[in-house]
Image (tube, rainbow, N blue to C red; front, side):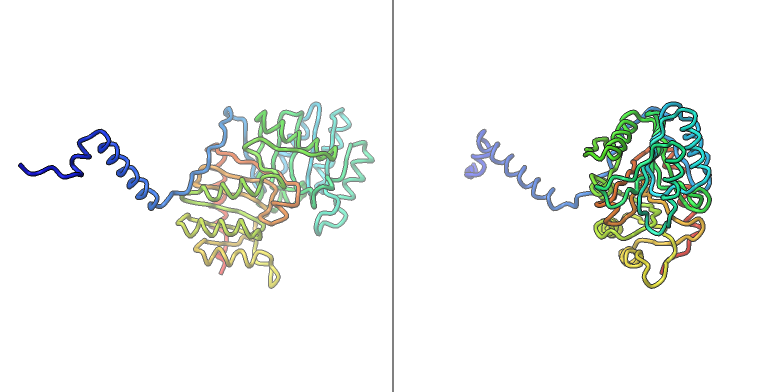
Length: 347
């Protein structure tokens, strides 16, 4: 009979079997550590009842969605916006105030390159009895674009309340009746109105300067197959790095921006970085890209007021929303593809 080896004896004992299992487990862990780790999928937004959120697209839908919201207000109307110059919107706000709706308007005092538009709107609203204030000085700019109607509905938008927003720009807005989103939007508005601190908590909302950067970068990093962007600005260094990494790990990255604005175009460097990483970049003149949207894997989207700039993430008051309803994302993808077909490849 062949003599039994020491290792065979150990494996035949309970101790030996345990030791052998431990060695095999350690080996499996070592091999697993060598395997590539797939990027995490974006977390699915909290489901809401059907019809809770709807989308509107500009310039396709015109001023109707905004004017209907203002004219439909019964008790209260809270508006925060970077630019307010559209005549029909100003008249609708004054009319709402005259019929007894409690109207509050927060405006940016010094919007870049807009002249005296907000000063004029501020004076006209105040003279008509509307309660109007300048944006919270805790932020470099009040760049948020939102309307809260009767404490029940919120319009979260990429668009200012201007003629060009309704008639010339590519813009998007989400109308939400989700109770948690409405409550938090109202809490944020009230905090800025009263010049006090505010700590956002709703998982579907993005607030600058509180959590926009973290939530947006996580969203980009979670994309597995595609990222579609329509962005007015491509300047935030960290966001560009994450988009570059996405392209290099095999995610299809396609981006539409406004046309190059000459030698000092602030988007030129960002476009170049993305092209070098394998992303596809195009520019579109008409409609002009003022939108700020990111669509991941054709399943979920983030849209809102924040540009992809350092200030948009860190210095301004901004508001965005993440949604995943198929009908909303489907229309966004359809609009993007139509714009992509019209856009000019950037070289």
